Image 1: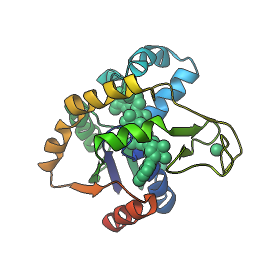
Image 2: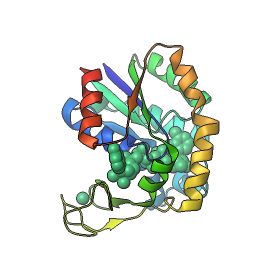
Image 3: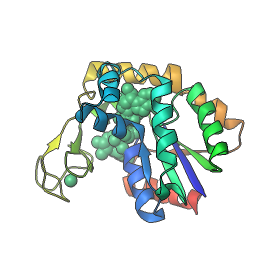
Image 4: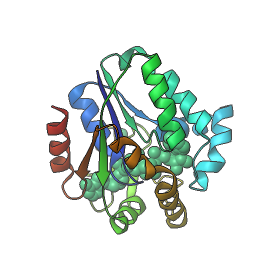
Amino acid sequence: MLGIILLGPPGAGKGTQAKKISGEFAIPQISTGDMLREAVKNGTEMGKKAKAFMDQGGLVPDEVVIGIVKDRLQAPDCGKGFILDGFPRTIPQAQALDRVTSDLKKEIRVVLSLEVDETELMERLCGRRTCTGCGAMYHVKFNPPKAQGKCDKCGIALIQRDDDKEETIKTRLINYKKMTEPLLQYYKGTGKIRSVMATGDIGAIYANIANILR
Ligand code: AP5
Ligand code: MG
Ligand code: ZN
């Protein structure tokens, strides 16, 4: 059971690396951010509740995200393992995850802590573009698409995320420090945490991660 937690601030590359891990190790990426954005897009009750928190750069209430992850982990494609991208983000979420994995007889094998300094995070998030079709991620400077504004894989238009505005990014970074950073300490106690320098070439960072996972 290859259960992986990707921990790191907004813009650290959790989504970028999760997609690579998912491709090679054939386990699903579980991104609470992606699932919440999908719920907002579909106008579900949960989406309506979550939107206000997300637009302000705040965290969605614990019970909402815990419920999403608990359901998702029971899907058949999580049988061999899973990559948690953006969950847990608070101590109560981590405690709930411990209970859920134990109930479902699943195991977290490793917690990868992606480390990037704050000025680079800001630059990454301001320049991020996402494909509305397949979810592929680009950066106007660091990882540009071949044709401007269009996805390399499906040719569909790229958009900027609603919460990637400078003011909202600042709030997200503050909330990360306050609510999520304490998880580093929480997982140090388990001996499962591995820190990964997450600046520089995306492929080189992935090579380090893949080495840890193998
Ligand atoms: P979420 O979608 O999880 O956003 P986040 O944590 O802020 O992280 P990001 O997705 O912005 O960054 P990333 O680490 O995935 O980086 P990426 O690979 O895209 O959450 C959004 C919101 O949902 C939250 O604010 C909250 O409201 C809510 N939410 C979600 N989960 C929650 C939870 N558990 N509890 C409560 N609320 C929750 O990379 C960023 C950019 O950098 C891209 O453009 C990429 O191309 C580029 N890049 C990547 N790697 C490199 C590199 N090595 N060098 C240069 N550029 C790079
Ligand atoms: Mg992401
Ligand atoms: Zn695409």
